[in-house]
Image (cartoon, rainbow, N blue to C red; front, top):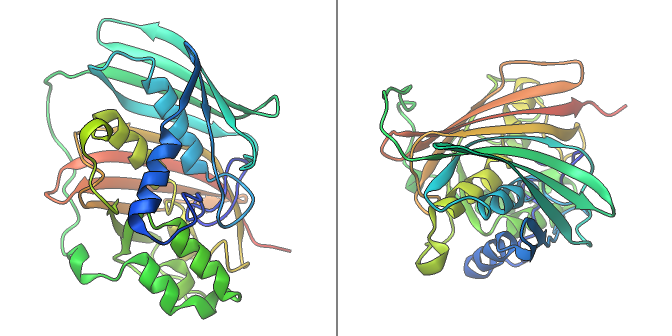
Length: 316
């Protein structure tokens, strides 16, 4: 989820991928998190670290669960969708065991179910569907127009450093910046902590890409999908906060928790090239907010669609 913990995860700025501001080291640490240890044919072990709060980042669990499922699928089939539920907070001090159930292997589609377990209890469920490449009817929504080039926008780490005083404890902003060092994320619209107290349209746009290039053995299409899954959980509920003038999960004026997460992968893309994440919130009610996102390549191709519902509550 965005900047808070949930039944599953820590701040999406708080994946804890190395705890260092050096982008190369942070990217290497992120890739290492997704390089799961194979314990048995369909059982994998992943590790995690948290740099901001003592819980596992939900995007990390989702990405690792997809990575585990992908390891049991023929290489010519890539994930085209995933549906997941966050069940319990993840413990960053303990390994996460991922068990994959080979639900179906069809002529064109493959289905896998992954359960993430810690301390003998499931913390996360994911079902993913994979497909062989084929031709079909083509159409898509257009990319938003008038979006500034990412080169003209400040990196998130620079913004956090400049406005550290808004977090109460400046160390919080520093830890968030360090935790996000593997991802070059640039807000087109101001993040919630810059608009606290001023409700506005529930829409947020960010550019993102990896802080370095993938090459060699790491440059696999399945890994790009896993990394996009990781990033997709960083800011998807920000529009809920914007609609109500809330500063964010780390500012203390709202608490939240990821409940579920779904993604559909439409067209090939690279996460080490700029992607535009266009996010909105159709509704919030009953202590829950809904986030909707579209991920576009820089040349305008709709690469993925994302949906997430999360608990969003005002502290009492």
